Amino acid sequence: NAGVTQTPKFRILKIGQSMTLQCTQDMNHNYMYWYRQDPGMGLKLIYYSVGAGITDKGEVPNGYNVSRSTTEDFPLRLELAAPSQTSVYFCASSYMGASYNSPLHFGNGTRLTVT
Amino acid sequence: AQTVTQSQPEMSVQEAETVTLSCTYDTSESDYYLFWYKQPPSRQMILVIRQEAYKQQNATENRFSVNFQKAAKSFSLKISDSQLGDAAMYFCVTNNAGNMLTFGGGTRLMVKP
Image (cartoon, rainbow over the protein chains, first blue to last red):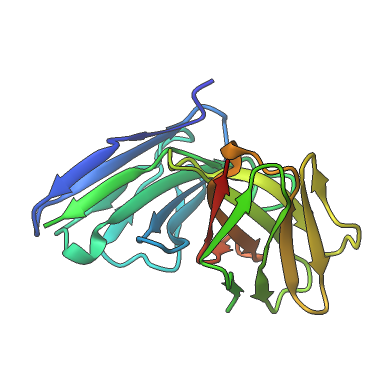
């Protein structure tokens, strides 16, 4: 059981480039999330999805886009990368919302550097 | 808006001893949940323990327990019989009705052999 799989693990981008961070889960979870973690800080929610075809903004959505065409996949798109997007990105999933009986399962993160 | 504050950026504990990590939070929700997540150097986020706010009884999971003081909005984590594998960043987290989690800034725990 793979859980939540993120690719790539590391990436270096030049300013203005674009890329897609991939996330897939094999637990048939309805809810999926993208977080970013800046150095020495907690995680901040970028976007989330409550099911296929439905996405919504989190705390820090600017500069990002998402789509959810299937239950399993929730890619995060960075357009026109900026140094402020240097961070570690985590994808997570849960069966229901962020509640007691539905804890989040996290991927191992993607370390992105924009120079 | 919800806030979560962890006032101890770093803590250290001797192996086999007990350590308590502090957390205070602020929320306007009447029903909410609280969590402690652990992030070892591997970067994986691991759920350590969870508490429902309407339950007065403090949650325990083996060597991990919490002291939940709802009126004071305090949610501390106690680790007993500390082990080298407990060394990690620990995040105090709460949720809201909108399925968003709010994370504290984290406490780095070092375990000395």
